[in-house]
Length: 295
Image: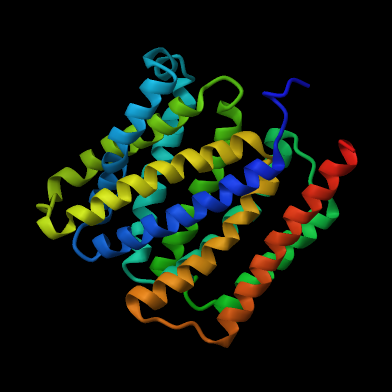
């Protein structure tokens, strides 16, 4: 197998962890903006703020031709998914702590794993299924047995966002066979900015000057996060990379505490430990497999 097409599990894992940290910082900014602007407008600002950086990088590294030679139907589907996903998540962030929203969002790795088997033909062994199930058990610990938060409108909005994220992640692996990383990243942001902007235009709220730094920060973190997560799913199995999303809970707890003074209780910490532990186990299992295949 050519080196360029071989899966690189360690690189993919590192890229995913970096992307999670960047998106957590971006989400903190989105949560701040959600108190002042409608969800579709925040989604449009998220796309627009990152677009200049992504466009400059794409043109410098791949050229305009790479942005035009793409599989348009799949990019349009990802654009629609991106709009729905971002607007739903922003709606939820206005009403839920980051750590709670992330906990509910963690159904996405299970959805990605389930979809990767029939769509991508990936193999998921019983030990990885077990580790993922243990991680989801940790999510239940965080949510409490009553499922508090899931049945609210905000909780349902997170579930919608998680489903959109899962399908979009699978499409990245499909697009990776023909389209460049630059095109995959650029068109998601461009279509999301355009579509969400049109939907938000009738009720557009004038931007406040004090939010300029936050919007710029969202643009930088979002651009870097989008690049790293796209590369992670291109270079590693979706069923391995996706569970590392669990590390977002740690960032959510830290940001909730430092910015909004929300301190998780003991059960939340227990659930976080279970979730992160399962993700670390998945990395260890993949390393063992890689060493066995390439002694």
